[in-house]
Amino acid sequence: MADWALEEAASKVRAMLDPKTPPAEVAAHFLDMYEDDRLAPHGFSLALGADVEGKAAEVAEEALRMAPGTLTALALAADVAEVADDLEEAEERYRAAFGVLALAANGDGGHDEPAWARPGGHAPAAGDDEEDGSSTRVALSTRLAGVLVRRDRVADALDLLFDVGREDLGYSPAHSFLGAALADASERRTMDPAEPCPCGSDLTHGECCRPREAAALPRFEDRSPMYELRDELRPFLERPEIDAFVMEGISDWYLGETPEEMGDPGETEVRLAVERLLVVSGPRPDDEHNTLLDAFADDPAAPAPLARRAREWRTFVRFGAWEVANPGSAPGVLLEDLVTGRFVFAAVPPEQLEHLPRWSVLLGAMLPVDGIWRSGAGFLAMTPNEGRAVAADALRMGRAILPDLLPRRLVGEVASELDERRRALRASLPSDELEPLSPAAATVMDKLVAAALPQLRDVLREMRAEPVDLRNTDGERMELITRAGPAGEPAGGRGRDGGRRPVRERGPRLGLVRRFEAQGRSVRPGPVGAGRG
Image (cartoon, rainbow, N blue to C red; front, side, top):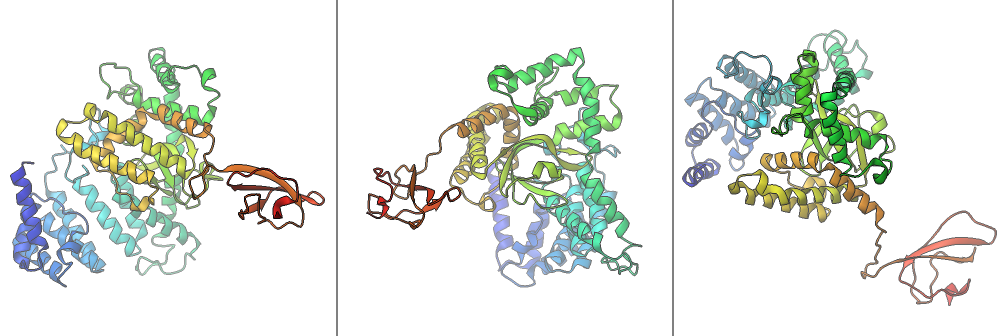
């Protein structure tokens, strides 16, 4: 966008947010900014009415008067009603906006499938209506689903959210609504079917929403579509003309070394290597975008449903360092990629979360199948500190290759984003205080993490091979001191340096002697029992 156009847009925004600007003038600016039935950001009405009570509602009325029946005005009115907790009005306005959308020519050529699912199709991020590349239909569906969840119409919300997933799994706002809706559906399994349905109908729960709610849970947790695709991929990858590319991808995983030289990687790491090669290797050396999953999907022998799943996997798969805030949540897990700051709500089997402490980080892939995010087959589990260090190193790598990936005019801005997030990770700021990367920067890092996964694995191995460098509050290196003393000596005895050090018991009591270890400043060893000297 030219500088004059940016300044003009900024001037309109300032006018809209100025409490002194009359509602009619604000509405005119709003409709001019979001012309051609574009949607304003969700919650935009909060900014319009931040300083003057009732002003947002007046602006929405003026917008409906100036542009009656338009998607832009209807969506603003719905947003205002939603913020005011008038959920019935919000639903009515969103459904009216859907009616406008259905009548409008969407340029989709009459296809029922989204563009990415067709041979040669592109990912949503290649450019649709929303700033992040998502379609207007996806954004409206998600907003309406959020209203339906708040109105306790969980089954209706889940129907919409599953449709959103089948069209655009990359639309992050849908993930939190899906998590809330599935949690409500899970809780309602304990309801008596004869109780009134929470949705407000005159029917019992068993007669109304319960069957659809109950069907949504196994649909979300069912991994059989993924297993079916993998079973079909196996013989395809073993074909002589494909096997060479598979072996090249495996060699790339070991960075040119043999598996013996690398040490036994274990079954989990092998699975991770295979999932990576499916999206970084391909049979066309002159086309880096044609992957093994593309080759499978384009194969005439591939069943149509499995070809669609392969394209879905290729389009949306995300490799990252996934922070697990609550491994015990069910039926799904909300995960944040520490590299990009993006969230996914995914179905993760219990065996992958077993014995995993809170805030652990999983290095690997989240991939979609039939509109539902699912964990990949293999992960490298990391502690919170390891995960942040690996994510910071990924951002460093991404920073270094930006000139090769982006137009020169974008390099500086994206580089600043990556640097800022890296600094925040290294400063150990809480995850919810970190700004997510912009869509442009996140796209770069998605590609980088998949390609650089072997290097990131080596970063993790090197960290684990290094001795722990413990220091006290004075910055002095700490030593592990093992000493023996009488059983009656208090655990906080004084050492030769005369300073009290915290000492903790280690191991069982053995007769009259206990073993202790202390972490503190280096002291000269003395005779047993001299600790009080």
